[in-house]
Image 1 (tube, one colour):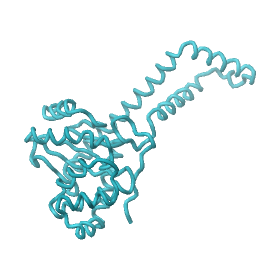
Image 2: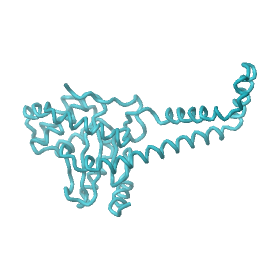
Image 3: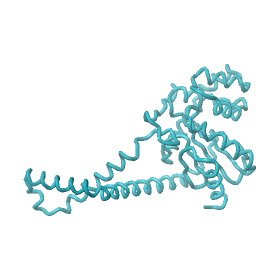
Image 4: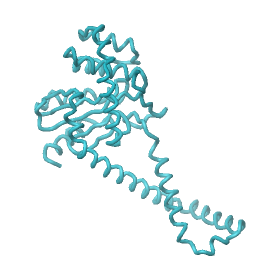
Length: 269
Protein backbone atom coordinates (compact mmCIF):
# COMPACT_ATOMS: atom_id res chain seq x y z
CA UNK A 1 0.00 0.00 0.00
CA UNK A 2 1.39 3.45 -0.81
CA UNK A 3 2.24 5.76 2.04
CA UNK A 4 -0.63 8.14 2.67
CA UNK A 5 0.72 11.71 2.24
CA UNK A 6 0.05 14.42 4.77
CA UNK A 7 -1.68 17.22 2.96
CA UNK A 8 -1.03 20.88 3.82
CA UNK A 9 -3.64 23.59 4.42
CA UNK A 10 -5.07 25.19 1.28
CA UNK A 11 -2.96 28.34 1.70
CA UNK A 12 0.76 27.74 2.39
CA UNK A 13 2.64 29.78 4.94
CA UNK A 14 5.10 32.31 3.46
CA UNK A 15 8.33 30.71 2.26
CA UNK A 16 7.20 27.25 3.30
CA UNK A 17 4.48 24.79 2.39
CA UNK A 18 2.83 24.25 5.75
CA UNK A 19 1.16 21.06 6.99
CA UNK A 20 -0.03 22.24 10.44
CA UNK A 21 -2.82 24.57 11.65
CA UNK A 22 -1.81 28.20 11.69
CA UNK A 23 -0.07 29.45 14.79
CA UNK A 24 -2.77 32.09 15.25
CA UNK A 25 -5.31 29.47 16.27
CA UNK A 26 -2.94 28.09 18.85
CA UNK A 27 -2.25 31.57 20.17
CA UNK A 28 -5.98 32.23 20.47
CA UNK A 29 -6.40 28.97 22.35
CA UNK A 30 -3.54 29.85 24.67
CA UNK A 31 -5.03 33.29 25.34
CA UNK A 32 -8.41 31.73 26.08
CA UNK A 33 -6.71 29.35 28.47
CA UNK A 34 -4.97 32.26 30.15
CA UNK A 35 -8.27 34.06 30.68
CA UNK A 36 -9.92 30.93 32.04
CA UNK A 37 -7.02 30.37 34.38
CA UNK A 38 -7.70 33.72 36.02
CA UNK A 39 -11.29 32.80 36.81
CA UNK A 40 -10.50 31.24 40.22
CA UNK A 41 -8.95 34.57 41.26
CA UNK A 42 -12.33 36.32 41.15
CA UNK A 43 -14.17 36.83 44.43
CA UNK A 44 -16.52 34.05 45.47
CA UNK A 45 -19.42 36.48 45.18
CA UNK A 46 -18.79 36.65 41.44
CA UNK A 47 -20.48 33.30 41.10
CA UNK A 48 -23.67 34.93 42.32
CA UNK A 49 -23.69 37.68 39.68
CA UNK A 50 -26.93 37.72 37.74
CA UNK A 51 -27.35 37.73 33.98
CA UNK A 52 -27.93 41.47 33.79
CA UNK A 53 -24.86 42.30 35.87
CA UNK A 54 -22.76 39.84 33.82
CA UNK A 55 -23.84 41.54 30.60
CA UNK A 56 -22.90 44.93 32.04
CA UNK A 57 -19.45 43.65 33.03
CA UNK A 58 -18.92 42.10 29.59
CA UNK A 59 -19.95 45.38 27.95
CA UNK A 60 -17.46 47.32 30.09
CA UNK A 61 -14.67 44.90 29.19
CA UNK A 62 -15.63 45.05 25.52
CA UNK A 63 -15.62 48.86 25.49
CA UNK A 64 -12.30 48.97 27.31
CA UNK A 65 -10.64 46.64 24.82
CA UNK A 66 -12.08 48.59 21.90
CA UNK A 67 -10.65 51.81 23.37
CA UNK A 68 -7.34 50.17 24.32
CA UNK A 69 -6.56 47.56 21.63
CA UNK A 70 -2.91 47.65 22.65
CA UNK A 71 -3.83 45.66 25.77
CA UNK A 72 -5.20 42.81 23.67
CA UNK A 73 -2.24 43.01 21.30
CA UNK A 74 0.18 42.77 24.21
CA UNK A 75 -1.63 39.71 25.53
CA UNK A 76 -1.59 38.07 22.10
CA UNK A 77 2.10 38.88 21.66
CA UNK A 78 2.91 37.43 25.07
CA UNK A 79 0.98 34.26 24.23
CA UNK A 80 2.76 33.99 20.86
CA UNK A 81 6.20 34.50 22.43
CA UNK A 82 5.44 31.87 25.04
CA UNK A 83 4.31 29.33 22.44
CA UNK A 84 7.28 30.01 20.17
CA UNK A 85 9.69 29.71 23.07
CA UNK A 86 8.20 26.40 24.14
CA UNK A 87 8.29 25.06 20.59
CA UNK A 88 11.89 26.15 20.03
CA UNK A 89 12.97 24.56 23.30
CA UNK A 90 11.20 21.32 22.41
CA UNK A 91 12.66 21.30 18.90
CA UNK A 92 16.20 22.02 20.12
CA UNK A 93 15.92 19.15 22.57
CA UNK A 94 14.69 16.88 19.77
CA UNK A 95 17.71 17.82 17.61
CA UNK A 96 20.05 16.66 20.37
CA UNK A 97 18.08 13.50 21.14
CA UNK A 98 17.69 12.47 17.49
CA UNK A 99 21.01 13.64 16.09
CA UNK A 100 21.98 10.16 14.94
CA UNK A 101 18.73 9.74 12.98
CA UNK A 102 19.02 13.27 11.58
CA UNK A 103 22.59 12.94 10.36
CA UNK A 104 23.43 9.27 9.91
CA UNK A 105 20.31 7.33 8.92
CA UNK A 106 21.46 4.70 6.41
CA UNK A 107 18.19 5.09 4.49
CA UNK A 108 18.88 8.79 3.85
CA UNK A 109 20.99 9.92 0.86
CA UNK A 110 24.02 12.11 1.56
CA UNK A 111 25.72 14.53 -0.84
CA UNK A 112 28.52 17.05 -0.82
CA UNK A 113 31.52 15.96 1.21
CA UNK A 114 30.50 12.83 3.18
CA UNK A 115 33.24 13.66 5.70
CA UNK A 116 32.52 17.39 5.83
CA UNK A 117 32.71 19.34 9.08
CA UNK A 118 29.17 20.78 8.83
CA UNK A 119 25.96 19.03 7.75
CA UNK A 120 22.99 20.77 6.19
CA UNK A 121 19.84 18.64 6.45
CA UNK A 122 16.92 19.54 4.19
CA UNK A 123 13.34 18.27 4.44
CA UNK A 124 11.75 18.84 1.03
CA UNK A 125 9.02 17.93 -1.45
CA UNK A 126 9.59 17.87 -5.22
CA UNK A 127 6.27 19.65 -5.80
CA UNK A 128 7.03 22.44 -3.31
CA UNK A 129 7.66 25.78 -5.10
CA UNK A 130 9.70 27.11 -2.18
CA UNK A 131 12.01 24.09 -2.30
CA UNK A 132 12.63 24.86 -5.96
CA UNK A 133 13.18 28.52 -5.08
CA UNK A 134 16.01 27.70 -2.67
CA UNK A 135 17.59 24.94 -4.78
CA UNK A 136 20.01 27.20 -6.74
CA UNK A 137 21.39 28.56 -3.46
CA UNK A 138 21.95 25.04 -2.14
CA UNK A 139 23.74 23.96 -5.31
CA UNK A 140 25.91 27.08 -5.14
CA UNK A 141 26.80 26.41 -1.49
CA UNK A 142 27.80 22.83 -2.27
CA UNK A 143 29.96 24.03 -5.16
CA UNK A 144 31.78 26.68 -3.13
CA UNK A 145 32.14 24.90 0.23
CA UNK A 146 34.15 21.69 -0.06
CA UNK A 147 33.63 20.89 3.63
CA UNK A 148 29.85 20.92 3.44
CA UNK A 149 27.92 17.68 3.91
CA UNK A 150 24.32 17.58 2.69
CA UNK A 151 21.60 15.25 3.99
CA UNK A 152 18.50 14.76 1.79
CA UNK A 153 15.30 14.07 3.75
CA UNK A 154 12.45 13.20 1.40
CA UNK A 155 9.26 14.65 2.92
CA UNK A 156 6.35 14.13 0.49
CA UNK A 157 3.46 16.17 1.88
CA UNK A 158 1.76 17.53 -1.23
CA UNK A 159 -0.25 14.56 -2.40
CA UNK A 160 0.18 11.20 -4.14
CA UNK A 161 2.40 12.61 -6.88
CA UNK A 162 4.85 13.81 -4.24
CA UNK A 163 4.95 10.30 -2.77
CA UNK A 164 5.65 8.79 -6.20
CA UNK A 165 8.48 11.28 -6.78
CA UNK A 166 10.01 10.58 -3.37
CA UNK A 167 9.77 6.82 -3.90
CA UNK A 168 11.45 7.17 -7.30
CA UNK A 169 14.24 9.27 -5.82
CA UNK A 170 15.05 6.75 -3.10
CA UNK A 171 14.78 3.85 -5.55
CA UNK A 172 17.23 5.67 -7.86
CA UNK A 173 19.92 5.05 -5.23
CA UNK A 174 19.98 1.40 -6.28
CA UNK A 175 21.18 2.53 -9.71
CA UNK A 176 23.62 5.11 -8.33
CA UNK A 177 21.61 8.04 -9.69
CA UNK A 178 19.92 9.61 -6.68
CA UNK A 179 21.67 12.97 -6.97
CA UNK A 180 21.17 13.21 -10.73
CA UNK A 181 17.46 12.48 -10.34
CA UNK A 182 17.13 14.87 -7.38
CA UNK A 183 18.70 17.81 -9.20
CA UNK A 184 16.69 17.13 -12.35
CA UNK A 185 13.44 16.97 -10.39
CA UNK A 186 14.20 20.14 -8.47
CA UNK A 187 14.85 21.95 -11.74
CA UNK A 188 11.67 20.68 -13.41
CA UNK A 189 9.17 23.49 -13.89
CA UNK A 190 5.39 23.36 -13.86
CA UNK A 191 3.08 20.72 -12.44
CA UNK A 192 4.65 17.40 -11.55
CA UNK A 193 2.60 14.26 -12.15
CA UNK A 194 3.47 10.59 -12.33
CA UNK A 195 4.39 10.85 -16.01
CA UNK A 196 6.76 13.73 -15.23
CA UNK A 197 8.55 11.61 -12.63
CA UNK A 198 9.23 8.81 -15.09
CA UNK A 199 10.19 11.22 -17.88
CA UNK A 200 12.80 12.81 -15.61
CA UNK A 201 13.98 9.39 -14.47
CA UNK A 202 14.53 8.29 -18.06
CA UNK A 203 16.32 11.54 -18.88
CA UNK A 204 19.03 10.81 -16.27
CA UNK A 205 19.53 7.26 -17.51
CA UNK A 206 17.49 5.25 -15.02
CA UNK A 207 16.15 1.84 -16.01
CA UNK A 208 12.42 2.44 -15.56
CA UNK A 209 11.40 -1.20 -15.15
CA UNK A 210 13.91 -1.70 -12.40
CA UNK A 211 13.05 1.67 -10.86
CA UNK A 212 9.35 0.79 -10.60
CA UNK A 213 10.15 -2.55 -8.98
CA UNK A 214 12.48 -0.90 -6.48
CA UNK A 215 9.94 1.82 -5.66
CA UNK A 216 7.63 -0.84 -4.21
CA UNK A 217 10.21 -2.04 -1.70
CA UNK A 218 8.94 -1.86 1.92
CA UNK A 219 12.22 -0.21 2.96
CA UNK A 220 11.29 2.87 0.95
CA UNK A 221 7.91 3.22 2.62
CA UNK A 222 9.62 2.83 6.01
CA UNK A 223 12.17 5.53 5.09
CA UNK A 224 9.45 8.02 4.10
CA UNK A 225 7.44 7.32 7.24
CA UNK A 226 10.57 7.76 9.34
CA UNK A 227 11.25 11.15 7.73
CA UNK A 228 7.70 12.37 8.36
CA UNK A 229 7.82 11.21 11.97
CA UNK A 230 11.19 12.90 12.44
CA UNK A 231 9.83 16.16 11.02
CA UNK A 232 7.02 16.00 13.58
CA UNK A 233 9.50 15.49 16.40
CA UNK A 234 11.55 18.46 15.20
CA UNK A 235 8.42 20.61 14.79
CA UNK A 236 9.19 21.18 11.11
CA UNK A 237 5.80 22.35 9.89
CA UNK A 238 6.39 22.43 6.14
CA UNK A 239 8.84 22.35 3.29
CA UNK A 240 11.56 23.30 2.97
CA UNK A 241 12.85 22.87 6.49
CA UNK A 242 16.51 22.71 7.46
CA UNK A 243 18.58 21.50 10.36
CA UNK A 244 22.01 23.16 10.47
CA UNK A 245 24.08 22.45 13.55
CA UNK A 246 21.65 22.80 16.45
CA UNK A 247 19.40 25.21 14.57
CA UNK A 248 16.08 24.41 12.89
CA UNK A 249 15.60 26.79 9.98
CA UNK A 250 12.12 26.93 8.38
CA UNK A 251 11.36 28.19 4.89
CA UNK A 252 13.27 29.19 1.78
CA UNK A 253 15.89 31.38 3.43
CA UNK A 254 18.34 33.23 1.21
CA UNK A 255 21.92 32.19 0.61
CA UNK A 256 23.36 34.83 2.96
CA UNK A 257 21.32 33.46 5.85
CA UNK A 258 22.29 29.89 4.97
CA UNK A 259 25.97 30.87 4.97
CA UNK A 260 25.55 32.45 8.41
CA UNK A 261 23.89 29.33 9.84
CA UNK A 262 26.70 27.20 8.40
CA UNK A 263 29.37 29.52 9.88
CA UNK A 264 27.64 29.40 13.25
CA UNK A 265 27.56 25.60 13.17
CA UNK A 266 31.21 25.50 12.14
CA UNK A 267 32.09 27.73 15.10
CA UNK A 268 30.05 25.69 17.55
CA UNK A 269 27.27 28.22 18.03
